[in-house]
Amino acid sequence: MIPIKTESAWKGTSDCRSCGIREMVLFADLNEEDFGLIHAPIDDLDIRAGTTLYTEHGAAQGIFTLRTGMIKLVRYTPDGRQRIVRVLRSGDVAGLEALATQRYDSDAVALTDISVCRIPLSVIHTLGSNSPRLHKRLMEKWQQALKEADDWLADLNFGTARQRVAHFVLKMRSAADAEIATLFAREDMGAMLDLKLETVSREVSGLVKEGVIEPLDKQGRVYRIADLAALQAI
Image (tube, rainbow, N blue to C red; front, side, top):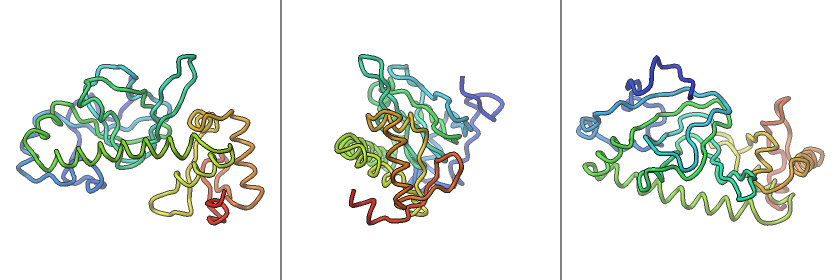
């Protein structure tokens, strides 16, 4: 069960018109006429780190636009190993595949405390059919998701352990400050990079010792990139 601050689910607590990241999300281009087509509630949810939003093959009721924090999309190999196939950040959409299949194709788990907007599928289908602006935005988000999935696979699953970790640090740079990279638990990084936890820890420590990155917190999650050229050359 998702713990939320709203009194109950589906109450319609979201104010899409004044959303702080509206220009980044699905409803960026909607006008007043479009908003008049929304007849099902959209909720703002605050969700704790470690909470599962939905599960692989689960029946879908809605999609989620991520306002703050990070979500990991997880799939499992036939032998039961966890693989993280993507990390979503502010402005990304989780569960977009449900528009075509009515089911989710991965687990979605909060990597950090997050805030999301939960949008019923009925809202998206109605707006997609009646608003060319939203239809265009949906196609853009879908294309973006496909490209990012390909990029994650190409950059993070090939090369030496050192190269994979270096590429991951580069990918996790902040949009607001390219010198800052936010990582997460070494076990999660290993699941994404197909590396053992010990290997990930050793490579991150190596980058710190060489002065390529500098830790900014005691948990080892936030780093400053001290030598971008060296990191990119790995």
